[in-house]
Image 1 (cartoon, chains in turn blue, purple):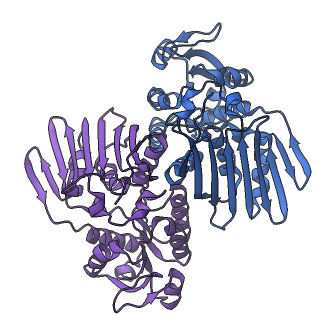
Image 2 (tube, helix red, strand yellow):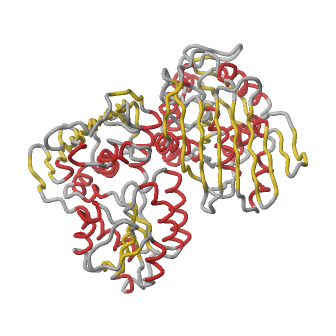
Image 3 (spheres, chains in turn yellow, brown):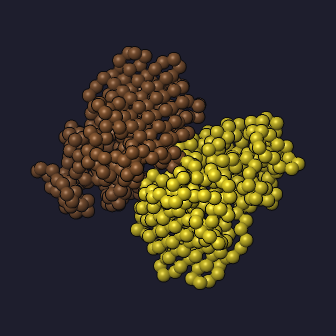
Length: 316
Length: 316
């Protein structure tokens, strides 16, 4: 797959599809910090960015800017498939915000489409770029682990104000942050793991859970427990603790802090999206795709196999 | 993957894990009709077959009969993963009744495990062996299709008497028969398709739907509608109609009857499990696996992305 054109790919011109909170908070500063990525234009029927050409939709943007070689798709989940497919069919590289689709089946089609078109498709799991993740993965790769405890709890009113879509089908409820934990766990745990039991608490006026207790295991019989909760008050808890052969690894603060056997290994500011755009640039340069559906598959499994229990209505 | 040992594999000795209704109704007659398959023993803590060595569990059966080279796993879904893995790890070929697992993630692990062990894993979708399926697939392969209507309706009291597990997580409710329709559709439709919208009717005393209306599309924008219903009275409806370039293909009676443009092409008795065991024998002889998760992925997508509506309690 390597070739001699990598000089060509050392810079790429980007279009942004969807201009919402995550774009302003995360994508823009990360793009600005990525030297070989040049933001050209945006496509959004309702929003735009100062001093940047703005279009109503992807097609209009690509028509006006044939120099765009890559797009980041940051629209609501249910819109992503058709936008991503249209971009791929026009030979553009595509970065998909997490989760990569509303369903697993549509993501399979995008994978096939990117392969056919010979362009890069990147299903971005931003939490995998948290400062402590790579070292945690390395430490675990050589070990047998016995027990994992994941706690992913935040106040939905603080972290998702007014986001009514989160309670609708496809919004995934507490799995919207929970999938970040699952994206880390599927990256760092040395064995694949799978659900044994799940309890999903669903508000009487919602389609998606406000809290979930999950029990997984792996081929070696490890015990992996996860508690996701949107009803946390005060600061969030985004922690996982992994017990392995008498040692204990703690990856906390969403992956910003790594402690192994009481020794502080890493404590850094979050700058996940910079890592994410660096990876996208690298994938484009190497003509590769990276689409790991494992985190979304875990969520689908929880919806398929979980026991739903009604709980009180959620009033924001 | 071919080798010169195929003479070796011309016959195989089989153990059955789980001796329930589906085994008595379907597996036994099909095994008897498969000349190169020799049934050796069964493993089930609660049931056995006349004149056949019976064991409490898989391990005891394999310990007592090292000559067994393949097992069929027909236990309740949530038990299959660990039994299948144990059999694969002992170098046995494995046939999994549908669905191949309680979750998609555990099936992924079995695929990896079979590959590592160099044995055949067969996720059996019996409806794909219905008489009209192969010809429907062939007819569609050369065509663009515009519209598909799937109706899969049966009386749960007649077809699943006393099967309380069907209403529990993992039992899948009306998707237990519905996955048969999806296994045919994913095999014969020329393009992958994916869910756009789903409405799941869930009895107030159940975890799984009693009826579902599903709208799918494919990369070409075809309209694919499926109606699954357990509340049918009278004979079942297991039909699909496919409209393609002015022609109409009807695959009805669960795939036993194929009509194209009002011409009767096939009308045969159902003997799906014979085809299924013939395929298993072929996979073993050719040292291949066949695990298509697409039907289960479609069900997981419907649970992930479907809109659940409560309906009246189900009293058998």
